[in-house]
Image (cartoon, rainbow, N blue to C red; front, side, top):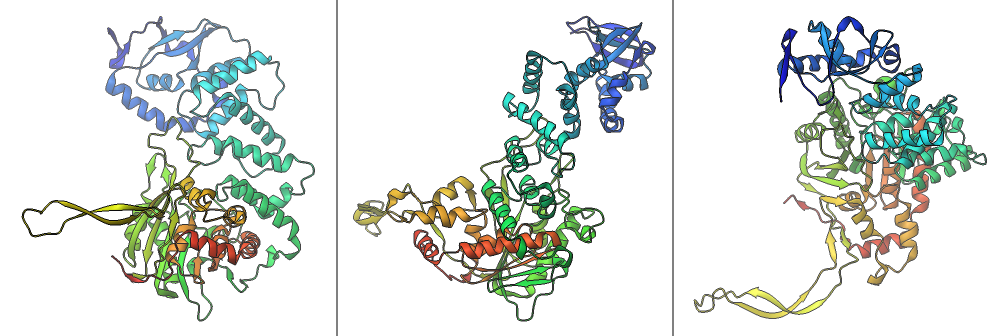
Amino acid sequence: MRTQKIKADVVFALQTRKVSKISTNLIEIPEEWYQLNVESSKLDFRGELKTSIQKTKSCTPINVFERNGKYVITDGVSRFIVLQDLGLNQIDCYILNIKPQSSNEIKDLIIESQLRSQLSSEGIKKYIVHYLRIGVDHNFSNSTLNERVNYLAEILPRGWGRSNIFQFKSLLEWELQNPSNPFNMSEKILDENHSMTVNKSIDVRCYFDNQFNQYTMEKEVESRIIQKYVDGEIRLKKEVDNLIDAYLHKAENRADLINVPPIMTADRYLIMYSDSSKVKFPKNTIIDGIFTSPPYFNQIRYSKIGDPEYANELGWEATPEEYVKKIVDTILLGAEVMDDKGVIMININETYIKGECMGIIALYITEMKKHFHFIQSCMWVKEDGKPNGENVKRLMNNCEHILIFSKTRKYNFNKFKLLNPDKYARITKGCSEQKKSKDPKTIGLKQTSGYHISNPFDQCKEFTFENDFMNYLVLNQRTGRSQDENLKTSFFGSFPTLLPIPFIMSFVPENGTVWDPFGGTGTTGRTVLSLNRKVIITELLAKNIPNIKMMLETGISEFNADNYEQMKKDSSYLEGMVDMAA
């Protein structure tokens, strides 16, 4: 390919389209560009662009159209600014044969070029709002709207089909009509690191668009049930429905948010309204394990400026190292009252900031190993992992980590095997064994004798798929073992999350006590209670305490001893195997 050298040693590749050299004093940045973009957000990119141009000596021509003797940029503002800074008097341009008739048309041209570049979720949202004329009167025909939706479906990341774009348009319109809603769903959907989806936004809007629904935005501000669903803390819509029902029907029994008691206790649970890093357990407290999912580093603020808990909220430390050390120091407080055979299970995930992995998992393991025996690291593969955006340069993450430690090398372990619906217990004749003989004539020969009994149970694995685990629990009726329909619909159907089940069953003895230092929504506590264990929960945020209490009361009411005993039989459960670590 021939190249052409010009001033400032910048080389422009000749293109198949006609390239025109235009003096920089005739080129202008349209006011519409500043209306659509935040200038400061482009500074880092321009620094990288300048370095690239100086290194490669080449740059793509910019797109302009002629207006009143000037050439207006529709694509390439950053290139134009960088090339001006490099001292060029003329710049290669593609002159578009167009005559925009309005400011809106100029914005459309800018948007159509910019949407293909790397943008923040806020920037993409702003572009789509204008491009589809959200919230303003327009004279679009149906064909024009369809053309624009088709264009967006082509350039947005995978998963953005026409249906999702129309639903996203409806969401943007809903957000304009409900400016006080706290969810910020549209930007979270556009953020590839967030689990929010278009379908989930439809569920959320239905709660508030139904005129017969007693659950209002004012009630949501207090309870934050749907906020937790949006943020992924609650994963199932059924669980949201249950919590809302409990909130509406048990309002008279809720604690006063203005005066939340420091301790709320019952026969099988204890709730402490406290900063877990300063927790003081009641006298004679003994726990048998810790299971917790701490707030992720630098991800979500659960309180706002002015709230009494704001300064102490976990996850906003200056560095990942400080964040991990604060959690480990908290766990050490629990270890002081934990049985020597107790096990610590931490459900955590990585944090990515500006494309860099913070190494949270490695920091946890390193810091915890200073104080505890490291048993293993497990992976829980989720069924609803969200694909990465086109601009995310790393492999898709659809799993959660569970790090398992013990106070000593001698710890509780219950053999929790799961009946595989696809396996049968069979007796087959002819089990082959290596013949153990010193006779040189028979060494190496196999002798066949006896019977082999196949095992229909699978051990829990350190790498578990959520769907597979659900299939294990909701047993196939043809196996003839779990005939009770309630075991499917009432017992396992009640769990807000399946993740804690294999770990609680495997490492915490029956009737043992589990501490969750970061209570959140109380879902872990509810699962623990449903598995015939007790729970202690500490929670920093006063507004979460009533929901936690309702969640734990739900767990107690759902527990059915007969169903639980049947589950143990179906899982070949062996209690209390304590031995030194292998």
